[in-house]
Length: 248
Figure: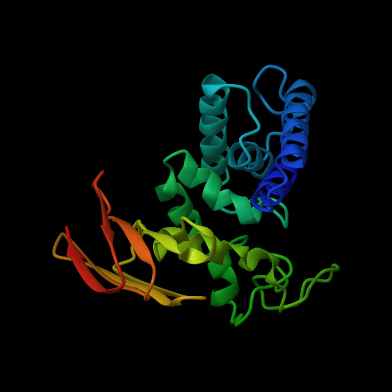
């Protein structure tokens, strides 16, 4: 929060106040490390704890980050690749895994159909995201506990990750003046598409995997540009507005 506040204030031109909040972030980070990760291992061994520490860059050095990455992958594997996060951890879980080059792990979680998972809700007839992973029990009865809303967005926050990593659309400048196009196929998906309506117009991607080839269609609105990175390559190509196709 303090980092975001610092960035907002900096964008508004108050560099002195922005520096104040950036300093606060550094102080809070040191306090977190001292209280919760003195030896590089978090006090709570949960998906949420490790996902948040990685996503928000709270650990001290690369050694600790690598240890945390290995631990998060291990926690997920031992949980049979089922989701183990709640309202706080779910929005950052996919980003944390992609940040440690484990997008494949999150794809595996995303496509699970057992409870708790996103597709469990679909299998059980859900048409909107539920408040709890098991608002409806496997036998078709309503969970007798509290928090059983069948239209509650919190776990739907995964859509942000899906948009950026499956659809491959992410902003590089405020308002999507410059946009990154970098879809990462995975799981058993052979096709995906995504659309974002920016202030400049519609940004869209559509990709397919067929016969070992990845084919991508991109549409970029006027007065913007995109930096396109194809899966399995390290090269980025900058394109302007219009329609573009790529195959790799």
